[in-house]
Length: 246
Image 1 (cartoon, helix red, strand yellow):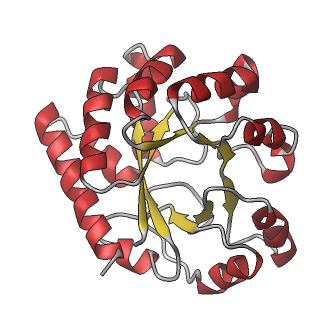
Image 2: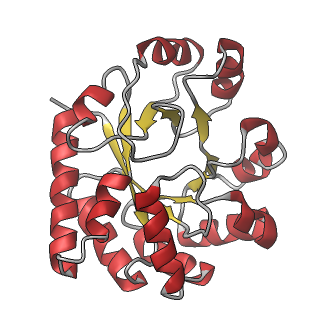
């Protein structure tokens, strides 16, 4: 069965809501949860997730809140922290590894840390039993794909197109998927532009999909109360999970 990874912005609208939403998403079929670490300059994300990041920061989000909610969420659903490298650098990778280990979080997704620059950190992350998710993009050469995928763990994040999340572009990924699968048996999940309308097409040839903006758009809908937001996101998750597996 193909997997569904769901991204949400931690602490938006508040950290208690984040826990309730995570539990509902797990019940709806989300296999892995990306807990987004709000950051003021999320360079790989589009305006939807950027707006949610700013709301969370303006609402008083602190890193300690990420650690607190993770202790409740990670025992229930497979959890990764998705964040930009700045906090990891300033607080120290060792600090994040310790917090992840204590909470049961399985690893990190750091989109602005290139494969080459991640090499000093990967061994200490893996020694702790955690994963640092590797990215492959359509613009990567076959030689670079071979190098990245040989050591990839948990899953490979295949970026569906060059650009930012949430724009819904479409590219033929079958060639790059075939290249990846010649070098590794690590599952390949596709992200960027995946929602309930595109999921079935995007899932062709891969082992799972990564969905972010489609969920966060609901969080930004001021016409819905908290209960309605959770119900709608859960329904979207169920719909995507069904579509990628039929």
